[in-house]
Amino acid sequence: MTTQEVLRVEQLSVSYGHVQAVVDFDIAVNRGEIVALLGPNGAGKTTVLKTISGQLRAHRGKVHYGGQDIIGMRPDKICRAGVVHVPEGRQVVAPLTVEENLQLAALASRRCPPREVRAGIEHIYSLFPNLAKRRFSASGLLSGGEQQMLAIGRALIARPNVLLLDEPSMGLAPVMTEVIYEFLGNRPDVLREVGVILAEQSRIALSVANRVCILTQGRVAFSGRAVDASHDITVKAYLGTDVTASDPLSGS
Image 1 (cartoon, rainbow, N blue to C red):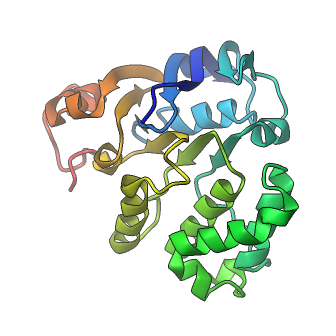
Image 2: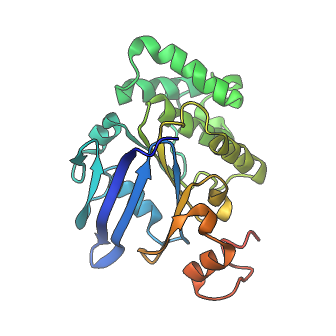
């Protein structure tokens, strides 16, 4: 794993009207590492990812990528530059088949040469064999886990330098969550040179992350190595109290 920085967010603040959703947020991502962005529902995780990918406007702050500040750049240009967002809820194009979704992503990104699209699709199938079996099925008919595989496959076929994953375990059966996280933990070739920001509510993200940033009410409560985010530190950052059954990081 290299230590080359591929993305840096500085003093990012985002508001919805008069409500501050994210305040003075900082994060840096190196090539080949996964940074977990943890926090309860409403903490600001999705807001951070949407702002990085250009879907939301920042009140202030900078997002450094490729030698420039990409704040204010159009989402399609950010994607074509190599920052690819997998949104929560997957958002596959339901009427299109699995293969058509992959073809569309490859061509729309303009990062996969047309002559390499076929090979790229077959490589995604090798990573997610379930998709190969369903290649001619309408993506809206896939299970939630298969749709998540497809959403990640669409991002990877666009050959990202930075991958933004928003709650990939959301709504999945435990067995499918294990499949997705086994994939992330194994770091296949397509991920080894990519910087990943992985937003989750669950502690499961710590199982694959190199570093972790915990958000509470739009502010950073803890930032450091994933191995240092002990159970006690994580719970205090979330709740400032002992473990309870309702704690999203307690594993219950």
